[in-house]
Length: 250
Image 1: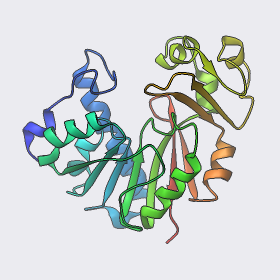
Image 2: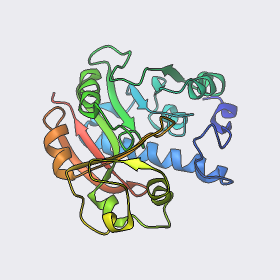
Image 3: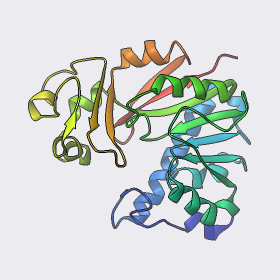
Image 4: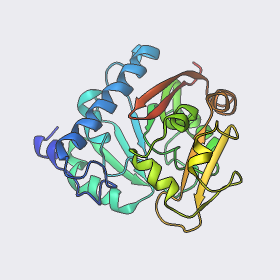
């Protein structure tokens, strides 16, 4: 990998506000997430130890994808996102480093052949999908090879229970006009257990991150697991988010 590409960093806006003024932490966070994903992948599918085909879904400007070619010792990494700004940045700065960037529409559709991918990662993606999330799981299942692994972060009931004013998620939920079948996000609501297995707070405007979604682990096990078997749910594996590890049947 070209060293210049490895160290090129997007602006704060281009990296969705991650780690303001802390470029080193931004870079390291992507490296740590890539290594954690590899650890889970190897535990379930040691045959993918070298040269797996990796897709980073919702890659933004390549926080994790930039590290995949080295961490996974592969030159087949697809960075997929709905935002053309991110695709342009990755193509310009990381294209020579083995990362292929592709824009997709905001519907469950991946421009990849069935059974063509060994690992799909998605960080802070299913936390914002307020509809068709099971269709996305089905699409991930389609593109995974037999024995392939999915590594997807979520807001779980643990996230709900631990939510506090020190988190950016707290203000994102409580300081915006949102609607949900369970009512507006309030301190009292989060002081109680999740009122349903799946709770979505959807903004009435239609900007970026138009929703925040919470799932119970039982919901994940039954709704997602009926499509793609759930192997484990790792608490707080991605900062305060849990990670669902799934594997396609061989």
